[in-house]
Image (tube, rainbow, N blue to C red; front, side, top):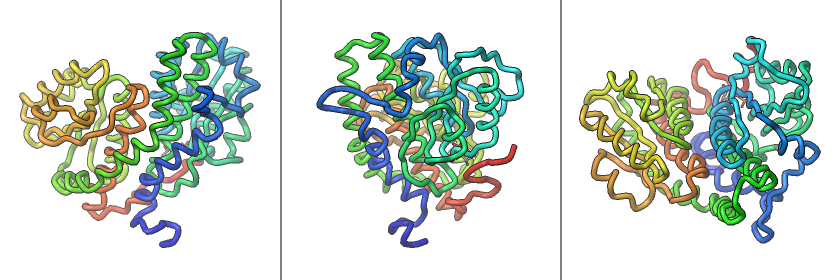
Length: 369
Ligand code: G6P
């Protein structure tokens, strides 16, 4: 097992550090930088149906569901196709409105999650075309669906999903850009800019990982907290949810993720000097708005850790601690901004002596309801 961990203390840490490679593997053969093109061979037979789709439903569970929310934002933005993201467990029991020819995309790392599989079978029985985004080749979901795109992230052993999540988002971005180009809902210059940014992602993730020591230090400072709030807006909203989920899973600290502006409708009541708040406040279209949200928390004495774009000075002056991430296009930012949150959850759990690779009560793949 020590050999399999490749010198890392846990599988999870190894998998976090594999992300520059797993993201590159996920794009290999699909993203052609010289030709400025994207090719998704697995779903080629369904591409016309996707291009003409009046709507798409995404079904998934857990972290895969959160990748689906990023997918919703990206596909809606670039393709102008309405997307609905559903928890598979809810979808399957609420008599969903599915008509023959509708398109469903199922997302699953393991390809074995019982609720996701049942949601797929239900949609297929109603005549839908179901495509999948899976990591495990030959898994039940990959075999059941009509076609799919593998994430090629390699085996994920740690129960808490890390590299599968960033690979799922990478696939969803490739899909969004490919459809947008063919639907002519994206300008060629923006398309090419995004292709270049995608190609730069593995290096940027590598740069991000160099901040491991700083994050370890923060983990030591915050390990005794009993609650955490994670706030983000826009593309970083699902990242806030994923950050909170990782902390809960690994360290058993109660954590809540929320859209930053929505916190004033409830969670703000929880803020006092004992409440750590993690803001994902990178420079995007919601930057000014999130600065106001930071000020609202500071006025109530919350302790703030902010994930900011490299070189940001404004947020730094308002908060207690910052972690800098390399700049990229806002739609790609979740792939980078989630990394410090994975590391923070990991190191807090290690500090607390938790079983990081196999947290209590959790399973890698939930094959029963
Ligand atoms: C379990 C795992 C999670 C995962 C979820 C969905 O809860 O612990 O890490 O996100 O199942 O699994 P899937 O394999 O369908 O992505």
